[in-house]
Image: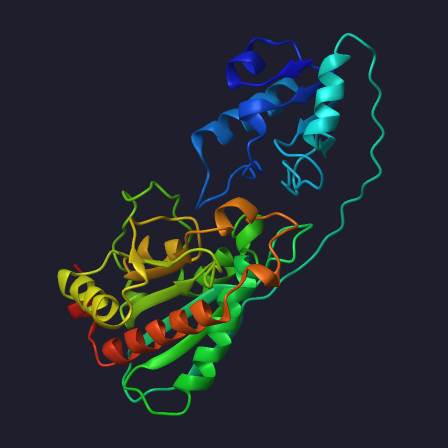
Length: 329
């Protein structure tokens, strides 16, 4: 059974059968069900349909030849699935009336992860949280996404630790951004908080009393792209904070561009609980090799990465004496 759209899948009888998914259904990896931060409606509908119909197995045809990334990576998925390159999908399509058998050798193992946190104490009760996730997806080195962000985080810890600051500086390396943001639960729980589903700009929450001392979060997820600029956006920030970020960018970092707010990283945890978030990522080759085997070190620019580090360093110097009231809307 072949399906290339949700409409075809809805109309097909796939229960107990091997279904081949292609076209619009396999343009990229499907977000695991229940993902809090990023869960597109099309992915929700696809997961719900598969759960209800219970096919015997799924063959996902990646929309590229050669090496491919897995389309289905949900650790809780109970329907056997494989991902094949486009040339294999073409053969299946040409012989769509022929019988198909599928053998999968796989296993599921429990695992654990950690959020690694370091702190440079300040003289005030406030703090800035700098963050990056250190995990990546299967079958990719994850150089841009997100070894680049971790490298910047470590460099900033070394640089900023050489001089005093009014607020404390927290450096958080999150360990489960790519597999459902499980690290959010562990980070939020000590404050009595829970993750809030993303609504693309409509999910800025009230600040929790426990998080009142946090001035802002600066999150780095995919920076240093060899072929494209670093991006920055500010979410849940006051006009004064917006202006300060723009002043620093415009005067000394014009190669960094402002973009619209986006939720799909760890900064969502902060702005959805009322803490201003400054998020950095990039535009360039990363959009084409993200989560792919090609996301390797050759596509990371040391010069652009160093520029992003200097930009964040200047942000910290501009904000370390700020009050929570000044940065919030």
